Image (cartoon, rainbow, N blue to C red; front, side, top):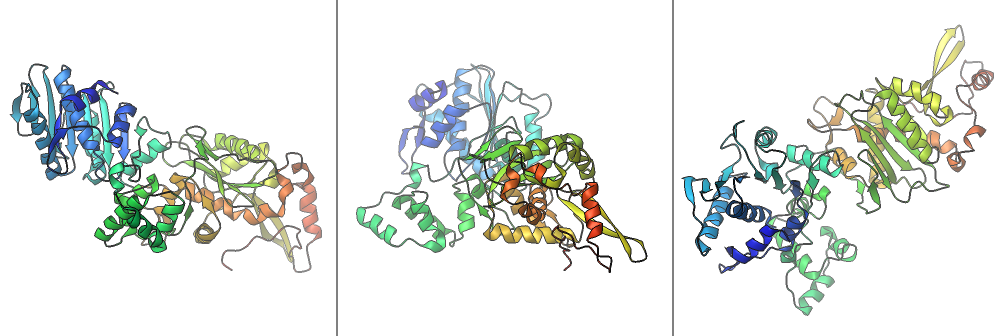
Length: 530
């Protein structure tokens, strides 16, 4: 228990939901916040769990008990700001003895004995300049702020490293500033700590029901609104299901709208808007999906001896703009078992990463996008990883009358012709075959669209590198299947012919028929135009 909580629960009075004046006792969500503060905290959450109320009380107590506190609380609209101001005045009115205060303005209350102050305002109403210092900053409903990035960045310039920053919000779609902040924190690529506060762990959302009401609710579980899954798989109580039914009725039975207001997972918190291409995805959260480090996540207990894996890779320049990414699937189950991403790895170093990951996953079959920087990655990869386990494309070019030569190029080239093919294949397989576990991949899938000009890619401000790595990996799935289950054995790779070897090329020429075409032992490349 923090000292602030002790003072809050001992001295502050609030009005409860029945209008009665009662001591402010922290609810479970507020207790969790109080016990896990890091100084840089993000709180994606369900509605009305008391996050802003906690920080209002905490900062008020700070102003009473510490010198030179400069606390700032910013809400998304004027009405919310006024409600917070009324609560502060309630704190002051109900205290005995009352603290000595001054009113510098309608939004600012000062505590002259401690030379401290608290300011409550609306996003964008006041700009904090370089001369300002904020020791404690709370930003409420950031996802709904206009020009959120500009406003938050300006506020943060006034907070020293020793200061506290806490931002909370219900979800407001994907791709906005707050969503990106939370995703970065979830992936370990931010100095902020993520604290997700779902609705189903909040006691106030578990309504009291009689035994008869409970029996009636269980007997009338509605699969159309996912009640059977929530009851049997997630152990929601009849009281929680009743709360959910009441809120759904208020929202005109909009399930996605309910999930955004009352999420059970981080994915539900940030609902995609508009018509994305991947509207049906088999995404499953699991505690077995573990982040190994800031770049790599793996589904435990993979890799499993005897299993075969495929790896798809999308290559960037490694200069902090796009990311180089890998997606790894179990070949037999098509379950996502690994994901790697980084925006600062150079293309040649990325080859080392791919080789290390592929070897770790039982010598996975690798497909690398060969566009742009991919050429550099593949040029390095062919020297450190078995070539027969790297996807290649065979091209026939005329060499003379009735004669052709075969050129084999490593990697998969994404073009205006092939991209719709691999994205369409990915879309189909995600609906019925592939199970994914990465919230970051799910977010990219939700924001992957067909633009007005017919091109495919992420909406403005979002990424699609993880999606492309998965799509590219699937481009090589048929080739990977040819090697069978034995290619995952580290000793088995030498048993297969190198498609780039002299003997293999000669064999292809021997198989040429009179028309100049080849009777290859390899599976023919599927032309996406067919």
